Image (cartoon, rainbow, N blue to C red; front, side):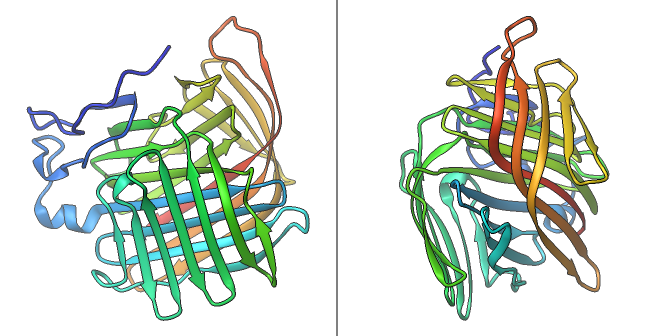
Length: 326
């Protein structure tokens, strides 16, 4: 079942969010136009409005995760380079910013994002078509990456569990990647790899938690989540089509492997971690705990019930366990 095209606005003329899964790029959400029962006061929106722009860069030997996060009253970023052959993080940064000064996350994915402190700078910019450029400068940790592709983008708009209001998220398929990374005293080539992004913009609860799974190749991709957003963003990219998936069940084994399946019978996978990037933050009124596991997915997917199972072997990606009080 193909997804319908993305609406021009996340909020309709009746003031209600247009809940659903779509394909295409979204305009600015316009949460200030929300009507009851989704509407909140201006102060509430300011305290609960969260935006982030995350990019994954993947080759056979390297995984990079880069994010810029604006939580309204503060902002932060993180970036790391994980050597998949040595199975270790070879470079990482995770500074806190200053509200209104150090970070900007655009209202749409095309608006890009940037973070800057003395000696540390990240910029994500769109080329106006289907491409993006990512630049990072942090001492001897440097990224110059270009990524582009014309595959269908996922737009999910839905209600938020755990005390929030509404949320929208934009996910890409696997995008052709080129460029280089300098980390750990060596240079890694990105040419021939795959990039993907997650741009999210919503009114979230004081406490938010999720498990998020993202993995992409040039021909196959998946995005899965359970937690604050239910099954709203679960999707499969298969042979050029973007297909919705059902609710996700995840079990984490004592050894760290994850097994996962969707309740529609379209996906059954096992995730084997190669390593983990931990990032914990503790402030007076807020805290976060992130475990972003890098590894491989094996198992099968299929586009519809009754269709033949398509084997998945060694698909690179991440499995994230996150919780925040923000």
